[in-house]
Image 1 (cartoon, rainbow, N blue to C red):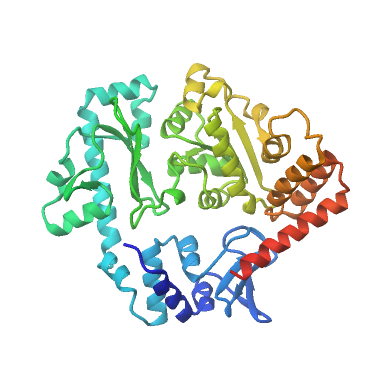
Image 2: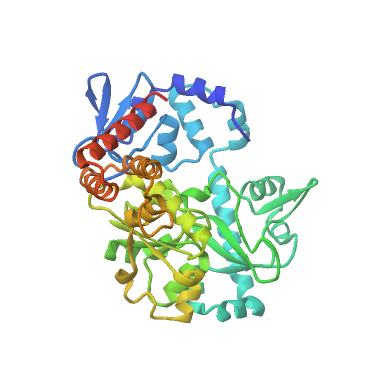
Length: 439
């Protein structure tokens, strides 16, 4: 249920953003603002500023910005409606009526978590007795051990499994609907997932927050995810993160792929520092989360046109997090393959991973400056347009050294004076920051 924007604006006017943020970050007075080391990235010099007059925060390092509501959602991991409720309590006012209607009681989240956990156990039990689903996994090269490690399951080919198992009261029915496990049409509720392999998605708390389902029949859509719920926001979660964390921390590197089976296939071949972005382009929230655990993110995207577009979008989402010392690389698999099919055809194809890495800026150069050519454009107007596009991207990077090196590279490629390029990037970056601070 949507909360009207006016109600949100009225609430934010009542909230003391300094009090909200200082509960999580130690703020120090600095003129008319407050500052601290940013809670969203690692730094030694404070670049995180809070403006109580404009009710706005901004980090000059990583580019994170927003209101007290945004802060609670990003830092505390609260859903939109829970963040609204917490802000209302901090301001001593009643939450918006639409939020109260949706939230119900304080036990709502725990009820959903409990139901999703029971659903996972149910799906795991069904997989043990469903031969076609087991055969499908075997045919895809997935062993029983990997299926157990990722808590894979099977949703029966029926319309009412969930309801028959869990709907013994109206409250449980409401929780089942709120969890996304039921869909509805023309006033009739039915199981959202039917005749599908089930992939549990675990949140930061270690609890199941949603599912992905892969049909094992000739049905559309091929993959189906849980809808957005009070405990699940697809753009914030990553499949396989709990299983990958030990290897990510050990190697300092994380591979990001597109699909569930990409993760499973790489795990089967000993590559364990890998997660999936739930079938979408990698979001800013996902990048921020991964850089808390790793110094290098490697985007391993499909080699087709859609994969390249997703890679370009992911890189753009990552630029505000590119501090000096962090790395962002790309592996584009040739022949239109995805990691799953590539490694099944050639089990050694990822052995020399570093030989295939392309730095993010080389990828962007090819896309923005070269645009499919072997050399930069010869026409001055075309080259100026390409320069502006790349300049605007470089300006988003917080790392001073990295930004400077890319300015030198851009100058060498375009033939422009390096000081001119650096001044252009600085002016653009300053303009972006000013625009954000006046929003």
